[in-house]
Structure formats: structure tokens, C-alpha cells
Length: 465
Image (cartoon, rainbow, N blue to C red):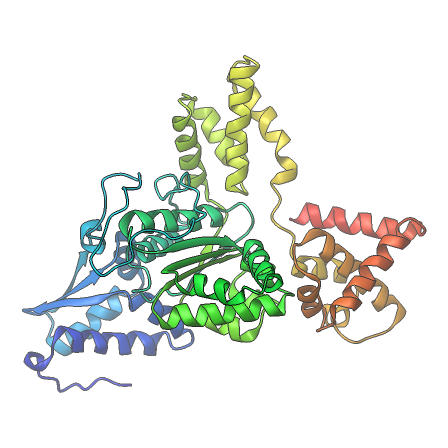
């Protein structure tokens, strides 16, 4: 959509001018407009005064992101419509503006009666109070997810980030952030009903409800929630009845403008074996990644953890740890625990040599997670068979053999259910996947060549990860 060159500046309101800017942004980012629309929908035009458009943004992160990615385009549009003196300014919302009910500490208040609202949590939230935003260290690796999480906690169900889908490898802080969102929302909105569930717990409670003929009670309880957090949604793969129940609960909550937060180990598009109608609904909101922490974030995490424990550590040791423990936040926490044990229990001197010794113990844990894609690539290269053949219908003996090994390794080294693995391997059913796994397990004890192939492939996977 083009812009008319003949515009009377006096006739434009702030809202109309911002809509014009959004049109230009969308035209310039047309290949992937959905995430941009989602992000900018949380931004609101506050005023237009003497050629200055003021945008209200939810946080400092939004301000910095817009300045970096969109400000030149916005300013160019403003000057085209309003003249060369037009400017863009920002109003960053304070915590008080975003959440006027904020309390001075993280401690929960006694039950409070709000006229016309529910009075207290009718069942346990399952939230762990030790996971908060205060001890979730911000960095480039997690800034979008953390900022979006704070926004939905401040205004659950009232932002474009619904659902908020947080994804990342094991150990990057998904569960911590999920609990932090719930704890912050509970602090700001004590009148709202919150619930945190792992997908396993969701499945277990639903199964028990079916067994006890209390499905309507289960459904009613979950449909009464204002903020539902479901952790590790990928474990619903291969469970069609549970997915169907989750789908109906999701629809009900979303239609009622209740907040939904989901975590997973992959982005929505890679949830093989999850129903398409569910995946499409995840795309309604924001998918925010958590990446392995960069050096500055690792350093900040170490300083925070050690400060909590009252440990004063020389800078050269801190730098060494931050440079050499590069994968998971959990590994950094493990290093701190080991330091505490060695210096306080075993009375060893804190030194660079001790740090080197501790880091060496974590080498097996410093690998990136092995994925099905990694396995297919490694098996393809090893046997000189194209990936398309491994996932296709070829029944050639050498292809079937390589495919069996790839399926076995995928089952062993990833957390995907049988049905999800079947999707990766050309839409095969779960019984075919199970047969491949069982065949390899049996042949490992009988066939030395097969045993060597598996060992070679695992060595390559671990070295490359």
C-alpha cells in the first residue's frame, strides 16, 4: 500500500500517523511480517504534537529494538508526511504504569478481597518461589523472551504475546523463566488464578480424570484459569487424546483473553507429531528463543551466583570459568556448586588450577543437544547415502540398514516420542520406529560390525555437538 504525497498534516491524528508508519514497515518487511506485527502491536501512539510523534513502549528493550531496527524507516515516513522537522520520541512505561498494583517485595500478601473479583487462588499454583526475574540474568541470549515474559506478567491476556511460546535447548532457563512469569504475575495480580503444569503433569491429571469419570471437573478447573503455564509441551507429542483436550482448553482461554505461556525445546514449526491445528495457534502470539549464554551473560551469571553464596573470587578465575563453560546455564550453576564443595567442605585453596580441574569434570556436559537433523546428517555422510533416501521409501538393503541405525540413535539421544520420530523419518508409524530400535538393540550383541558402526556414529555425534 503506497502513501499519498498530498497529506494535510493537521488532519492526521497520532493513531492515523502510526498506522501509516506500520504500513510502510510491513511493506518493507513483507517476506516475514507476522513477527513484526506481533512485536509492534504492543507499541501505542501516545501523542502527536508539533511534528513530534511519541510512542508508548512497554519496556527499555522495546525502545532499543525499535531504535535499532525500525526508527530510520519510521522517521523517514514521518518527514514525508509531516515535513523535514518531524521527529520520533518514546515514552517507556514504568512498572507503576504497567502494573499499578505492584507490591514492594516478592513476598505474597495475605488474601485480599477485590469487589467483583475472585478472592484468592482456589488450588495450588505449583509455582516455585525461588525462580524470579531478579535471579534470571538478562543477556543478548534471552532478552526478547525475558522482556516479553515481564510484559505478559504485568498485563496477562492483554498483550499481543498470547500465547507466549518460549523455546530453547535443555538447560537454557525455560523452566526458570516460566516460573518467574507466574511469580511476578501473582505478585502484581493477587486476584487472578494461575497454574503451572509440566506437560507430563497435564497428561497425568487428564488421564486420572478420564479414569475417574471427572473430565468435566478437570475441564472446568483449567478453563477458570487467568494465566496457564505449560512447560515442555513437546511431551504431548504422540498423545492425541491429551492434545485434543489441550486444544479445547487453549481455545477457551484464548477466546476469553486469558494468558497462555508455553515452553518447548524447539520452535513451534519443529514440533513434529503435534497436531497442525495446535501448532497454528502457537503462531498467534510470540515465539521467543533462549540461546546458550554469550560470554558477557556467563560472566554476569557467575558473579551473581557467587555473590549469592558470599564468595569473593579473583577476576582471572571468573574469566576462565566464563570462557570455558560455554553451553548451559546449569553447567555454570554446577561449577559454582563444585567450587563451594571444594573450598568449604574439602578446604582446598581457591586457585586457577582448581578452576581448571572443575571445568574438566564438566566436559561431557558441555556438548550441545543432539538433534534428529544432526543424526541424519552424520549417518548420511558416514554411509554416503543422501538424507532424502534415509527418510524416503527406498528398501535397498544398505539404505534400510543405515535408516535402522539413524532411528536407533535418534531414539537414544533425543527426547522425541516414537510418533514424532516417525514424522522425521518420512511419516512412518510408531510401530515401524519401534521395530528399528529393537532390531538394532538385538543386533548390537550379535554383530560386531554393526556395533562398530554405532560406536563410530556416536563418537562423531559427540565430537560435533
